[in-house]
Length: 404
Length: 137
Image (tube, rainbow over the protein chains, first blue to last red):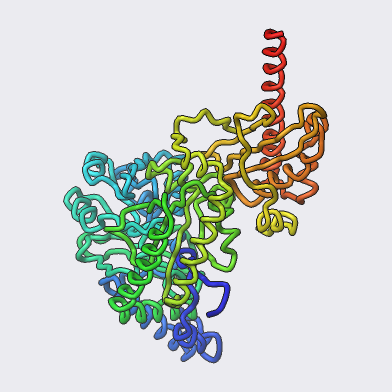
């Protein structure tokens, strides 16, 4: 077993060697511009791009003409939300999203608010899921878009996408979902789920960074977008810019591999994840799982180890790459807004660790991680005045703290 | 973020971890911070009432590595100092000793607050003891 162990696969994933091999020719002899119509270099590049388009369409149940290539899911989210807001401005100016969305969605919505768009940020329940009744009530005749993520990047919970899609269709509202964490991990189908727009990223599914896609529905309804990047009119005018041919080939191959192995891989992820969870919970008291286990990505585990601060825990397990919702690990010095939205309390947000399992993790690594985390949590609890008070039976919520 | 070697040393080998008897009249206890802010420090000193010298200091800290290191260092510095000397420890001394980056300065402030709270608690206890002795006499 090689150290350090990478278990932060919601942040990014290692490029699968098969993906890398598929990309390699496009850095070499096959370097053409896919938009060059009058020589073989261009034709070969275009052929590679069209093959990738089919592979991507296939994994989400779309058709190849519905795939628009972008630089990644952040751009896809921007294009979907801003593009709809602009295109459908005459129809309405109201967008519905959720408090636990990725910043690429939330900050895009905040930007639109400055331009007069009204945005509803739905709260989530303690299990991390939106309440369908609240969504239903939030829709008005001015609502043009619902944007709710498929799977959450911190707690891995799967929103009720099929239900949202059905409701959106009934009410004549477009439905965008940021499926960055979901595609390749769980079965996704834009037809069955009535999704109109879907954001996809390559580097979360063993593809390269800097390439993604936006699914844009062509039929019932035909979704139109105002382009956010102007230029040569690539991607049917929706996204100008010379196509990143090697990246696109990588995204296509990543989709094909994930689709072919999905059932087996998700079963393996779930086995490893549950093993990690069970070992931690068997050896440590006062652990809280953030978000429902029932509707969740098979590779995600997010646990708060009460009375232990997240960054100090990361320091103790420095040969394991994971993430924490602790403020001390974030640039903003604020604890995770996703965990706060669950209503768990800031103290548990500070104590959280996100484990993101991936294709290249082994059972041996999971065993090592479990042992190490258990050791360090025990050590830090020996150091923790809060754990001592808890053991003395003091209710920490009743203590008069000197907040600073 | 890269930690300084001194922070790592205190984190890996924290000095003077533990608790002193809160009800001992010679023990001063300071507890500062809040769980929702991500750090709580408990710092205790045991003072020789004859000499005013801190004979023992213990801490427990919930917080990041820099918070643990700041309080661990504080207990080292407190031992052997008089209570008045202890009050002269400044957060900037801790920042310099541990090479804390700007985002971690609040950890050193918290440690200084913990020292002041512990000494303050001891002084309050000592004053009330003297007072009650006076009443009885």
